[in-house]
Amino acid sequence: TQLLEQSPQFLSIQEGENLTVYCNSSSVFSSLQWYRQEPGEGPVLLVTVVTGGEVKKLKRLTFQFGDARKDSSLHITAAQTGDTGLYLCAGEEYGNKLVFGAGTILRVKS
Amino acid sequence: DTEVTQTPKHLVMGMTNKKSLKCEQHMGHRAMYWYKQKAKKPPELMFVYSYEKLSINESVPSRFSPECPNSSLLNLHLHALQPEDSALYLCASRPELRPYEQYFGPGTRLTVT
Image (tube, rainbow over all chains, first blue to last red; front, side, top):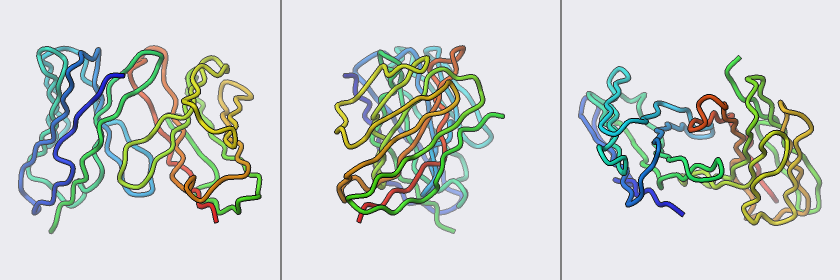
């Protein structure tokens, strides 16, 4: 089974600060996904990165996929209270399965 | 229509009860999933259906019984559950053209008393 190590586990910051969440593996993934989940709701797909070295931007969120396709990062600029939630990275494993990182709980304080 | 729906939103059941969770999608996705999620943890895969056939069972206890009556519908039948089975149960589906993406429903919050 491939493993995804996600860090940090918890992050508590003030509104307006920047932050980065990391997702690392010793295995190569054909793609990586980032999800955001609010309490009591299902994960919502934010982005999929497929190509090594790829950078995708979604408003204040910037996603990178490592050149070797073993790692990814999520950077949030000028965090807002609405960014609070659980952030999950996930990679496609064999047999139509997703392997998830442990998640990063982000709390943005006003 | 780009959503996965799940009912009920909340469910409280006793250990001797029989209940069912329902999941529906009308996006034409042919792979559907059940996950179990504990608070502040990532989802844990339970079952995968591909073209209405069970393709993966992650060694889930038999008190959980999945069913896929058609390509749009997925059920999870519950019987004789334990308090530790209390969790958020998530359904997801996956498009064929973008097989690396999964779309999740809002979940059913299950409490076993």
